[in-house]
Length: 153
Length: 144
Image (cartoon, rainbow over the protein chains, first blue to last red):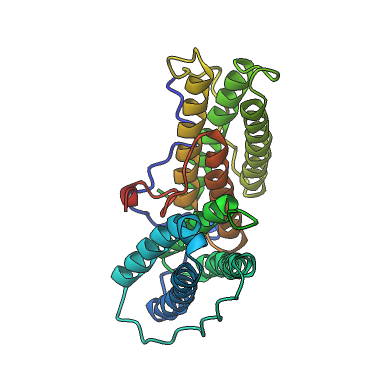
């Protein structure tokens, strides 16, 4: 037997699930659109903070570049997932004066966004949408792990 | 694939993951490659806990959990630490894909747990040579 640890084709079309296992109900599209708007607002705000932090603190440009690239990809994927955004973004926090404080502020906002993505994934009606949101959260988990605690010297 | 099938498939993957982690750990020197050894040890412990949880879930549902195979083929070659690390990374990528699939096919607390397992696997990839991605667990979005 070939080792296929955790192998499961993620692209397989979901069939009607077994009723005894807490199967997903029929997706509530209105609810998912509300979640999409909420998540796009959160990602947009976090991305704006990363961009502004890089602009104000050149010493953090390289440090924050991987996160910037990932979050732009997240924004693009979410944009392709649904209707035009209604533009209700969260207020973007001001960039802190020193690089250390600015980096800590990015970390805090991204950590909150990771938790919001997990909660949004659990609330999503569509399994495919839930999967996308979970992946975005996992991506932030990776980037937060790699983000240094202190700015480069 | 039903939710139950997805849980069974994830459990089958965890059986294989445990076997492979055990084999990889057996080929790694604790003193010669301490970081890799620690990563493999942690991976083994986490996957064992996940296997046990999936087993309990299935039993609670009155379903017989899929059993582990007697043995599994190992990746070839496994001669160096790099080979071992590469095999562990490939394994965690498959696990992330499995848990992302489970996210899509579950609801409520079971889905929340699957999200946590996906993130855990994605972060563990960093300890075995992986890089941060934009869409861990979703192979069709890789490279975006």
